[in-house]
Image (cartoon, rainbow, N blue to C red; front, side, top):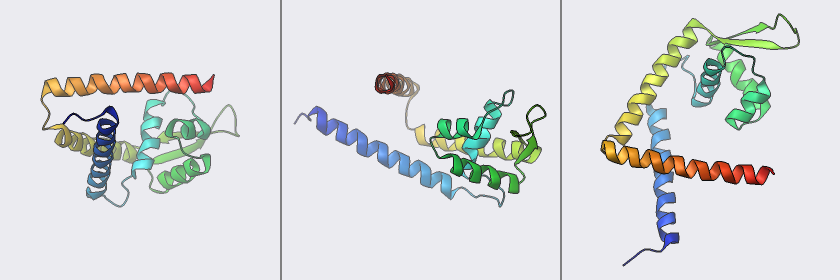
Length: 155
């Protein structure tokens, strides 16, 4: 029996939901040290690493991570308490702050990225190189469609 397009889409949605849940539970089951950043805190640290050469506001973080500005402030405060991030005043504008990743934070970032990479390797291990390339191509096609749709709604 041939499945309808809608049935296939429901199957894909269910599969993606299961993959997301299993990935998240796998990440949460990793042994965490006391000062290990949470996944949300990791998002902040990765953005800090990517934007190390320029100033980024809490609003920029909120927009990029798609969470509220107050939530960003709480995440940053927790990172500072864990001594993973350091806050200093902006020398040009005292109203602004500069966030930098501490040496301890850099170590944790490397460690968490390694755990993440190992998890992804395990998740996609059943796929051949050709299947991975096909998946990559399909995901990029989906993302292009989503971006086009997002741009259409902003007009």
